[in-house]
Amino acid sequence: MTNTPPKTATTTTTTAATTTATTATPPAWEALVSAALLGTERRTPPVPLRAGQSAAAALLAAAAMSTVRRRAALRPALAGERPAVAPADPRPPLPDAARRRLSLLLADRGGAGGGSRRGTAPDLTELLPQWLAAAQEYGYRAPGALLPALLDAARARTDLRPAALTLAGPRALWLARLNDDWKFALRGTGGGPAAVPDDDPEGVLRLWEEGLFAERVALLTALRRRDPATGLGLLGATWGTERAEDRLMFLDALREGLSTADEPFLEQALSDRSRNVRATAAELLSALPGSALAGRMAERARALVFLDPAAGPVITVEPPRECDAGMQRDGVALKAPSGRGQGAWWLGQLLEAAPLDGWREQFDGRGPAEIVALPVADNWRTELHDAWCRAAVRQRNADWARALLGTPAAPDRATEVAPAGSSRDLAKLLAILPEDERAAWVAEFIAAHGLSDAFRMLGVCAVPWAEPLGRSVVDALDIARDAGSYPWSFSGVMGLAERCLDPAAADRLDMLTAVTDEPEGASPGSGGYWSEAFQRLVGTLRLRATMHAELTGSAAPPAAAGEPVPAAS
Image 1 (cartoon, one colour):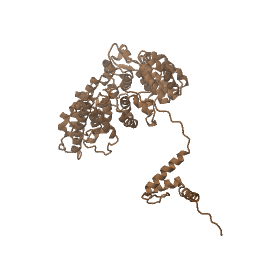
Image 2 (spheres, rainbow, N blue to C red):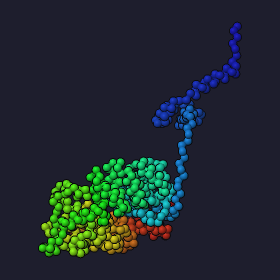
Image 3 (tube, rainbow, N blue to C red):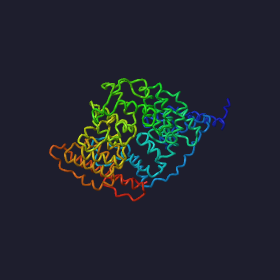
Image 4 (cartoon, rainbow, N blue to C red):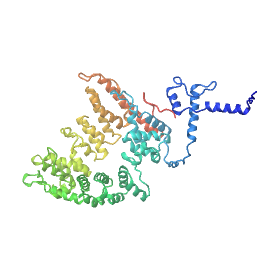
């Protein structure tokens, strides 16, 4: 009889362990992912279920266990370097109401409707830059929690960057070093603060020699604002090794802090290999009336434009017959544009580079207004006055700008308004005048000629508009409505009024919000559109008044109907 060994506890235990090991084999990671993507209702998870356990819970538990198992085989790595502590910002915090307002504006910055009819609600997208500009005057710091949204807004809109980065302060640069999306803050582009090492000459030199091109341009511009000589010294040290296109941008940065101390460097740049660099150097030198180049141009100009004693007080013009090597070195372009005579082309370049103050002696002691009023022989008046306009803008000469602008109410003044970029661009001449005088001139122009040619002039007037200018714009809009004019053709001016009118004008504009009878021949529905536009204007002005009150910490005026109210924090 064969003796069969009895089953011992050891044998039973070994069998159970084998069974457990077999059933506990972990499922493949790909199978777990597949079941998760398809859903446990469509694919049964490849894991055993415990009593009362759902398929989804079992799947998540298996995924967690598999993750731990996979990571257990990895060697521990060195921890990354901890970021430096955010710098302190000692500026005062925003008042609570202003902080809530900023939060609302940042949250709504992408919510502007795209329809052609805007309705009566203020445009919060356009109120954000106004809020930032107003906040800049008080020296507040941005709330830390809103810095990411503020930097996102500045990334999306370059026009917001200067004010947004000023409000964000040093913590914006700290955050920008941690997020590539905000690197623009380090470059200082768009007018924002440049990343210039303070009191660190070695850091400045290292950034100039090793930085990205945009960073170098921003550094040079910032240095020229602080210490023009230091900026010029940096540029001079590497000038011979820079690319032509880079030299052009660096040279353009010298407009900041331009003075006679820059003349030797610019004179050398007149011999540069690049024609564009030579032309820019000549332009900068001509903006310095005491420079040697300006003197050479004045001598050439006086030989070509003078009073003819035989013809009486008449300006005689003799265009140059050639463009010699000296003229070309001083920035006179040889080849004229298509449709332009060579003599007139050379003459214009000489005149715009000649110092305007030198014409008094040339014309027997006459002042700018008397010189401009003199007749010009042989139809040279337009060429001569256009060149003087360019010279007045380049040399920032208010006396000559005033003389060339003339009387705004003159009957022919509206026909002389030229498009942007023209040498007769009245907006450029106006920008030279003091703010009050500028506003008064544009107000008188609008009163005499309406709004059709005034849009660009309004853009160079100080904000908020002075009372005479604001009243002139509103009166012209009211006249256009009463005449049944097409309302959409004035949408640009209406948008400017929302941003630039004094908020104190809101109450007296209430009467314009009513729907009026449409005159015969008016655009269909124009009355309703005009009413909406004036309601939006009044609502925006009141909201701007509220924002300013919030920034000062004073009690805000009552909200207008339909005005968004900041959410409670």
